[in-house]
Length: 290
Image 1 (cartoon, helix red, strand yellow):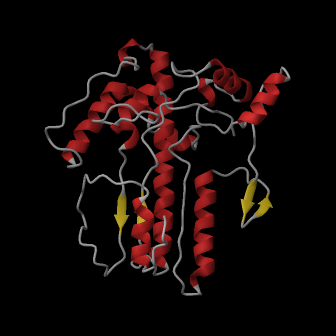
Image 2 (cartoon, rainbow, N blue to C red):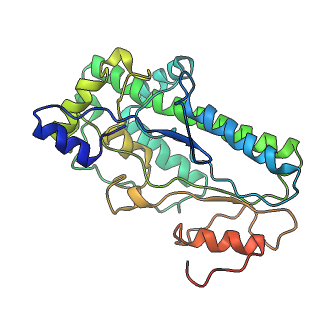
């Protein structure tokens, strides 16, 4: 969506504003028309299931990488999903949500009972300092994010249902993880530059009424990003736990020697550990360098 540095610099030198760059879609190396009128999760999930089904008759193992884009800006989701979350976030506010996440994570055993509640962040504002209108806007932003996560969950479930119904679930290693902590960037936030703000305003409808729609490019913002991390501090772009400590869920194949079912671990690992793990399960020899 964003123009490359080369394209942006060229436009600025010519006294123009950088354009929106629409990426070319490819499938199996061939250019295809950009699909419109469908949320990306629906499109990508459908393709994933289609590809797995096409190769099923061969009886060969498959590797599937499904990178859903929900939970990332721009915040866009079906209105019916958004509306039901608005009252909850308007009631909780930023501090209320952070406290709720903190308490629920400790209750679930994700963090120890003696985990301290983090002090206020120097960059974030207070919910009570907002006007009623501002609270409604902020609640709609978070509600849109929640709607995206619900949609994300639905399509992950769709893949699992397909694997179960086709008899492939028990023999499949599944690894689920995000790439980083919550996105705290905001074109209108304290860390944004004027070029990004002006570019966003020029190309998208940034009104409150458009939040969640396809022509909107609103972001979650610092305060909600901070709230969603619960016991952790900071968010994406910061080398702090809120930015780099993320969950990882593994569902091993049945009859494997994996004996950690239902166990939670705080072991430090990196995505670099995943290729080796997958190769081990597939009984594929590691390359000399990886």
